[in-house]
Length: 119
Image (cartoon, rainbow, N blue to C red; front, side, top):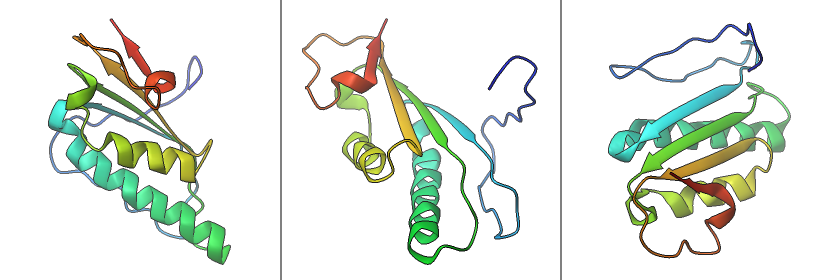
């Protein structure tokens, strides 16, 4: 986003992401903390499917970029972290994630280091 960008914000509740082939592409920012990643991870998998379908078939919904911001106490509490890293590797520049840890006591593994910030 840039200054004066219009954004829609939804917190909790019943929500989903189900774009149709004729819809305009959107850029998504997903923000999760702890186990709140569950519904957003499902959305992320759906987004990866949309990217994969677009790349293989060349039609369907053209997905914009997705940025996931995900916070937990430490890296061991980051659910689905290996799956999320796999999605970032499969769709570089299209799916990105920034992990944030608030109480990390041990060394962060090399695979996660470029994507993790702390307090």
